Length: 237
Picture 1 (cartoon, rainbow, N blue to C red):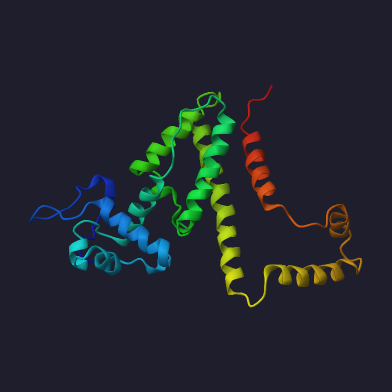
Picture 2 (cartoon, helix red, strand yellow; picture 1 turned 45 degrees about the vertical axis):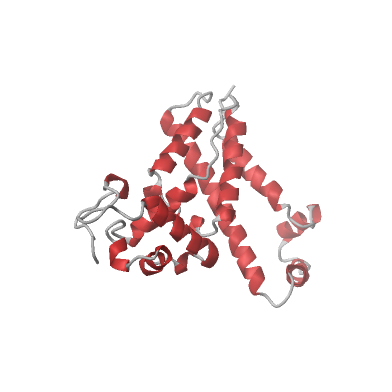
């Protein structure tokens, strides 16, 4: 593959374009935007160097002068999406600010459904990722913990959001493929589960359903998951 390095390298440490020739016709931002458009419209699997080159109107081999590997293209995409994070003046309430960041990240992942698949610590130090991390650390200034603990909090928060959104997206994708409505399927599954519980083989499950047999409030579950995680970092009296 053209441009593949023999040693590990970081795309951000490279010049915008390598090699001789005329002034570059594209920027990394142009390339990332093209890849994001494709992924948003058709999914991550539709993104390839050839497809991005076609979107830009250049040759595939020319694109390798800007982005040497597909993995680098993914990193550009993640950074481009991360640039959509809104940064605000910290409120002084670290917990409220972290909840706001979590909800914003969730909305971002729904705008770019391919993003959870690319969430990786190795992409965590791109320009926009650093900008976001610095902002979150500023929001956490009132929390009397070392920076290592604060970075752990941010990572755990993003992990909860990523897991939750991944499940939301998978459920929505499965629902679109079914020949019946979600309500019809839920009714059939609840009827089956009720029959199994009625056998008496699952007394604890029977007790749980007796407490609350209604539908699960997924929004409330999300809020509780975030809140309980943040509770673990709150200063002890």
